[in-house]
Length: 243
Image (cartoon, rainbow, N blue to C red):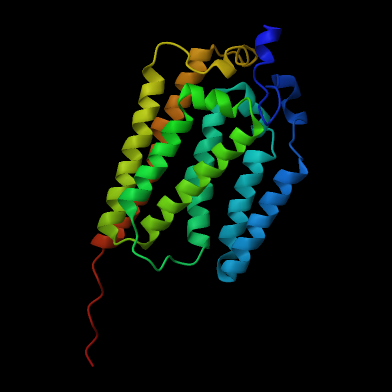
């Protein structure tokens, strides 16, 4: 088992036990600098929306600085929660903090790119690479966030019907991956083969929990946004006042 543990050297360190979780804060200067730099850039681009920038930075601190970072080395379900927060919380906050895109929104293309990136990094081989190489891990996080921000920016700029279609497509693709993980009868992710038992979860149960996180709360975010846009579209417009 010790030799197997050495195969995986995740960015957030070895998976913690429950007793040591709250001692595992990630205070790496590079991560803190990048998060602070992103926050400063967002505020500089759109000072009137600084509250969204602050909210995005707060979620990034939870993802990369709090003990959730270490927990995601132990549990695939925690890693999934990490990715969900990155793509359906941080990404839309950044998309709305930035100035509105002036070009033609390509909702279908950006949604497809995001789904491809998200599914790609959850392929067992790609995931294992990211869990054993810091540069691969950085590439995973950057590509997930960038593709999600692009998709959310396209949704924000698109007419409501196109935006709703993109959101529902993202919901289906997120939910489908979640369903696959939930019903797959064997554990797929070798980095977590030896790290879940301390948390009372067999690897398959941890994977199923991860699938449920994608299938229900993550997909629900897209549905809620789509329903919100539909409600705005169907809301009666105020009649013009007589001159």
